[in-house]
Image (cartoon, rainbow over all chains, first blue to last red):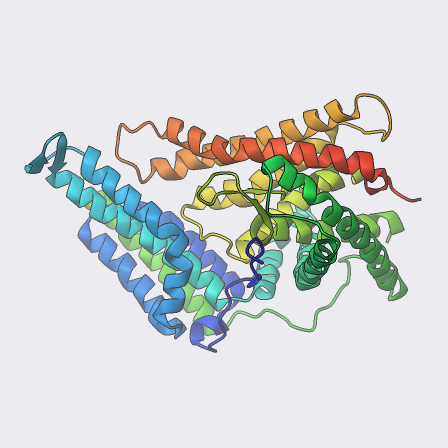
Amino acid sequence: MSAFQSPVLGQYIPTGSVLHRLDPRTKLLFVFGYMFVVFLAQDALAYLFLTVIAAGGVWLSRIPLPMIFRGLKPILWLIALTALLHLGFTKGGDLLLQWGPVTVYEEGVRQAGWMSLRFLLLVVMGTLLTLTTSPIDLTDGLERLLKPLEKLRVPAHELALMMSIALRFLPALWEETEKIIKAQQARGADFETGNLFQRAKSYIPVIIPLFVSAFRRAEELALAMEARCYRGGKGRTRIRQLQFAPRDWGMLVLLAGLTGVLLWLRLNT
Amino acid sequence: MNRQRLLTMIEIAIMAGIGVLFSTYITIRGLWPQGGSVSLAMVPIVILSFRRGWVAGVICGLLVGMLNFVLAATPPVHPVQVVLDYPLAFALLGTAGWIRLQPGEKGTFWKVAAGVTLAGLLRFLAHFISGVVWFGSFAPKGMSVWVYSFLYNISYILPDILVSTAVMALLIRNAPQLIRVNQ
């Protein structure tokens, strides 16, 4: 079954650390804010603050380093490419190396280092968010953060509900797809040969039953929800309430402090 | 709650689930000799868009993008990229339904092709701008990030559009009930 990899849905690794216990809203806000302030950094001191926070996050999460590295893998070649581009094309400062048409300047090395670090910090923080927060918690957090937009008629509750349903049905849909693929293979279907269009065409006998059954599933679920008097978001209560703890406020203060320091460094150096 | 509205919501949710499966886990290999794959992620979004109108399609796309973010298909690299590459790019795919389809009438293929191409190009635009912004913030000064972003993004979106058009045309011919709503 080379063409179909088994899905590992999400990257969440529960370790019960303090990062895991943070409110998902805090983590979303912190990571998003962090991604903005990274771009303020220009000198070693600023990068030092950012690195300490990212490294502290990794340490606090109690997630084994290889797991974090696995999340970074798809991005590593991009980081390497960026570094190479800077080594080759950024000019300025002393000429450090000349080898045929290839020249490496001092500024190029500096920029290659900073840009790779910036890239790495962004990706580590993004990965930490999904490693320490389950998709369901992230959905909850997003719903609550989008709540103020309900005044602008953005259906935050409905969006979150649809996201939860999609997440809930992903494994079932995956299983069903696999079953249909096997059933068609048993009838002699071939997904592995021919050109692109022939391969795409061979998926038609998979897609049609999958979609037909998906629409049937949707109808059954709608009926079941109606039977239980689902009325949309108005007046709906929830079993798990998100609540800000002191540590959440602490994180937001940390973010504000970091932003302040980086702004100050940017304006004064 | 209105029954059709509830049913539409659930259909959006389940199609978004299929969209996530198709965008990451089930892809068609063989685009380039060394790896590289075409995704059918457009197909469920476009089907829903033809079935329930472009608003439903846009919401479905939005969900696919948000789910891909929550499931961390690829880690984010820039705050602007988070918005453009995930929710917006996929939401724009839902615009395919701006054309109303009557299965069986003449010229259906061209209508499907027009819908899919327009939606695909809008998606391309979102990824293209995103690429310019985020790669621009990393690349050396003076590098033409426009060209790189254009070439990189068109290299996979163009095959996606062509294959999705072919698949959509076959689907609508062989299973027109998929875009018809039972009342």
